[in-house]
Length: 406
Image (cartoon, rainbow, N blue to C red; front, side):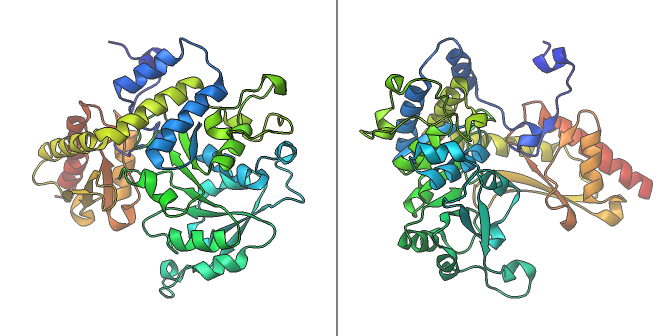
């Protein structure tokens, strides 16, 4: 049967990298894809839909409220905008011109990354604190909570915290320092699932807003995300994302987000309007979230383990490489590490990455450990026929290199 990509003349790839956007993310489960398709067959009021989404997200995360966004980066943009403006429509209309507003975001220097561009896009300046001596090798310290407290001033909109197992200071200490000054904390937890418990962890530890990806572990549409947290801030984020081309007399704010709040007027199309999320993404994400929280993770981990074992079973026993399947130390998702014996193989790990990627089919793997001589394979996005294809290609590349060296 011809796939839609074949009909469009686009080659498909074997995605052993994982749910990264550049390799098009994951594979939606049939029930989620069916919900997405069914959502196209009806029209709804988008504010009402996001209001119901808020109830479902709140139940899953323990937050007061939540909305579906067009990805985690969009959630960071909207969350930052909400921290700047609150529910003031006049301020919303001015973004990204933040003159005279709270327009600084405090952030630990060792947590800076490509994705904080989404935060800066709201019109803020990032104020870095701390010296990451533990990463530079100059010492053991990183930023401390008192440094965050010392950087907060009358211009601070929020503290941005990037959740990683190695992030310092711990989130509860950061939240305490920010809240003592009356400042919210926005957490980037885009890829911090699984475990499922992390859906609730960051709010429980003091975060005011949390951004999750919907297209990674949750297995929703690749272009979806979640912003959850304080009801007033989530409502402010939604106002800067919705199509508000209507008279205020027509506005029916969802009670789950706005309660009895009365706005002086509706803002214009906000800074987040370009991050539009469709009804199809919202519905599919909600179905995926419900599956994720009701046992879907365990089944997926078991499937990944089987897939990786099939790859290992198909490898020649005398390849110039060491292979190991082991769970990720935080998520528990199994990963296959192939460590290349450069001397025996006559090629290094990065050569292997390129040869896999440039062959047919194109196989994409995780190159993050090539300097240590290893490639990493994640089975999350593999189709049933892929393990044997990967084994054949590894045998061909490494076996040929070994024979040339013999």
